Length: 93
Image (tube, rainbow, N blue to C red):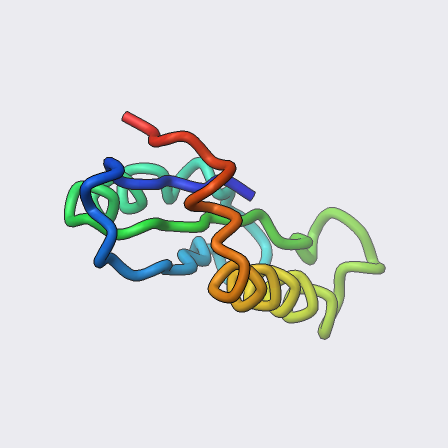
């Protein structure tokens, strides 16, 4: 999971989960970096994650990918209450 956080003076932005494309078979969170940086530039924090790709293992079939995404959403909800990203993650440039 990569977290892109805007400058400290941008405290009104949203925390956005960016799930890369690829039909559950290809892709990577690194492909989403340019979109995350666009969101960051608009004052938002972005979370990009890799999920279990179906072509990497038979264990990665449905619902494994959705479980990976649900874990990221749970982290984001926890962060909303705790403010962990604001406290612990430095600003990315």
